[in-house]
Length: 157
Image 1 (cartoon, rainbow, N blue to C red):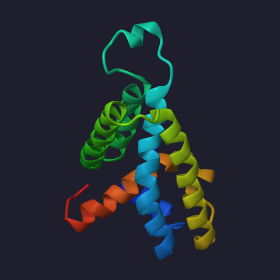
Image 2 (image 1 turned 180 degrees about the vertical axis):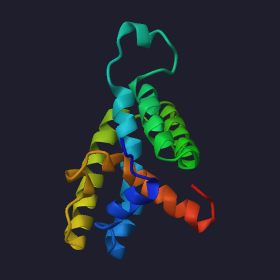
Image 3 (image 1 turned 90 degrees about the vertical axis):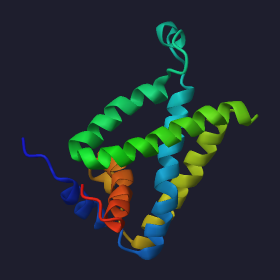
C-alpha cells in the first residue's frame, strides 16, 4: 500500500486553499472546529464501564485514533498536534468548571457558526472543501496549519 506523505496531502489540500481570505478563515475555524468536535464527543453519554473512570470520556478516547493517524502521517507533526490536542482537552476540562452554559450547547453553536465560516471561505475561494473528495482531509486541515507553523520555525516534519 502506497501512503501519501504529509507534503503530498498538504499540496492536495492546498489546491482549494489559495485565497488569502479563505486561508485566514481556515486559521480561525479549523482549530476551533477541532476543539468543538472533541467537545461534542466529550459530552456523549458514556457506558457504565467508562463512566466509572474519572476524566475518561469519548472525547479523550477519540484522541487515540486521531493521534495514530497523525503519527502515521508524520511523527514530528504528531508531537505538535498532540500538544494542541492536549490544550483542547484541558480547555474542555476547564470549561466544565468555569462556565454555566452546558458544553454541548456551546459546541453545537460553535460547530454551526464555524462551518458556515468554512463554507463562506470556500465560496470566496471558488472551490469545494477537500473533504468532499476524501474524508481524511478533515484531519489534514489541522495538520496543514501545523505544517505552516513548523515551516515558519524551520522545524522538520
